[in-house]
Length: 148
Image 1: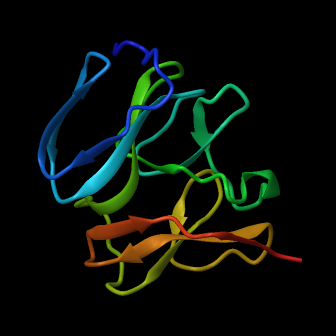
Image 2 (image 1 turned 60 degrees about the horizontal axis):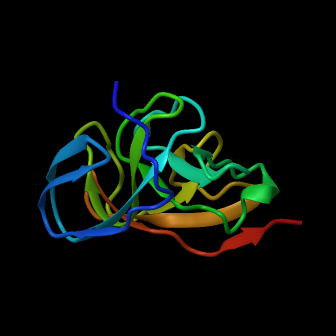
């Protein structure tokens, strides 16, 4: 089990290769992207959009929870258990072979941190990026728009 990260945020700009922080190694990172390391406040699945709880640990962001508007920090790059260090991608390209996006689609925050290609109809709208290819997205968190 990976050790918890004792610092709050560890910024890094990566231009490819490996990244080691808090006794945990992340290998095979590609492209120019930005990452932070945060502790998970609860179990987190990979490729979900995150915000922070009142103690600064990451939890799933949810478009139906207006308190999460403009508090989106990025996407989990892998799964982590509560209290474990988690690499969070704050911007840049991310490739996931299991995805099947339509290139050019705008991508939005949905419920429970899910990424979706349609804007939610209630809560708030936050574009988190776009699909560059069927399996590659560009993370670029936008401003949130609270819906009436």
